[in-house]
Length: 271
Image (tube, rainbow, N blue to C red; front, side, top):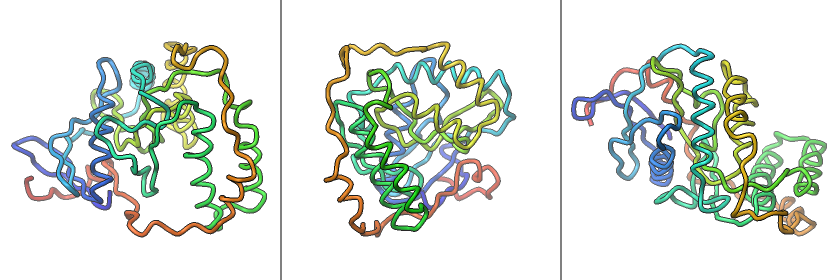
């Protein structure tokens, strides 16, 4: 989203965000989908219209190990709530969504390794390469992962219901625990959320990860079957596609202000 501010909505403290209609639709659908019984607390969607989203305001608080552990238990519940397929968008959500300021494609697929390589690794590898953010050695290292994606993917699991962008900035510590905000929700592998928590560091994040693994050490998969079926590898055709220059997304939003920043902003006029 390109802008966020505090406001009042029918007498309630709220946050209003403005941005492209597709980003608003994706976030609203994701927030609704992530609200599951006994899952992590998620801000309520109060109003949605093209280009504008109003959600309940979450008051700030302090991080604690107890809140982090509760977050982990809630994430395990959320992941078990499942998704129709890997790459599936939330119900009512657009296929062309966003993760932060970057476009993100949600296209359902039956098998996680091939989907993750094609729809999550390759697009952002192209972007990083074209922007000069990765050296040729860095590109080659990711390509080696693509070549080995089947063996690195681990045992098959059913699609989990993911927040999708669970870095520390999207964990909001409040007076009543840890809330999750600003999702890029989709069906995927639950390790994705745990990896994001670890990647940028999260206060007491190890407690969250430990609780997820205690609550769900292995997610059995009736839908995935026993042995993982053969997947379409990332061979020369996809690598050749990677090497072609990509046209930048013309309507990509500016880097978003977050709900954390909204707590420090002056209030906008009532919605």
